[in-house]
Length: 358
Image (cartoon, rainbow, N blue to C red; front, side):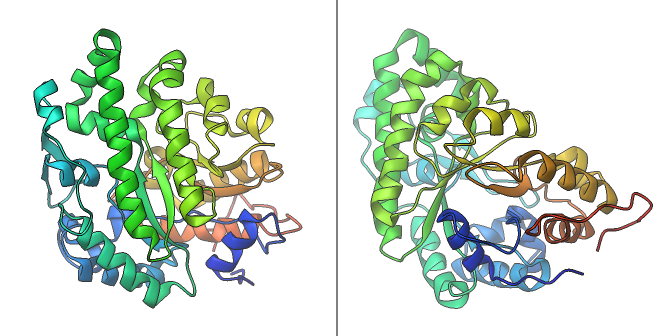
């Protein structure tokens, strides 16, 4: 087994500042998967700051996660505004009731106070303790929703898509309101000293011209707020095939773009690699969930070969969130693949007859 020469915090700091690193970083962020370490319900990771912290500490010890944190993504801001959220035992929370049915509903809304609304205070308490417990070793990151995703949670995605066509000014008001709500949370969280990442899965559902009008200016402003508060550029993830949107995404000012498996990593490198670092993009379901450790090693090496020389850098990771039922041996295989095939100078050949790669 290869041994790291840097802590994840040291590595990511050097990575972001274009300094020498020991190996390619691995974005091992198991998300809801780690609920098994602290309880028998995914909701344990959302409704108790103590359980959030405990799960992250356990995940660092058991799975060697490369960053820790929690945040209001994807529906936490909308819940704080007033939407109702369901917390299943074995699945990701989801919104059951949207709060904006008409313009009158929208006009009655107020920007939520982070310490008094929804789960935001639980999140802030957990981040504060994570900084104390793990902050010297790991980046502590609060993942925040993009403005279009929050707007779709407030209005309902079908209604918002109709608004884009039939009532664009109303849609922009909701998106702008969503942005301001998120920034209010960020202002409070930044006082703790956390970093931020952005996830805006709904953004890939609209065409490139709509992206330019209804997503780009708001997303760029959100990124700029992150930079103003933390002096660092955030990671940005947008689900789906964003190939036609790569140029616009790079122009948001984000520092790292997390690419879905549907995007060719080498093509992304060639188009935007001088502007932004790349992250990804092993298939979460076909490979991480359903594949073997050997298959993960093979796919990880392919990703590294395509993007290790990206001018702004490359982080090995999944194309989206890790499925809850991922075999734990596959998690170990992903991290060890980064250690084995991502060392500088890059070297190492995979023996296809191996059953495992660690």
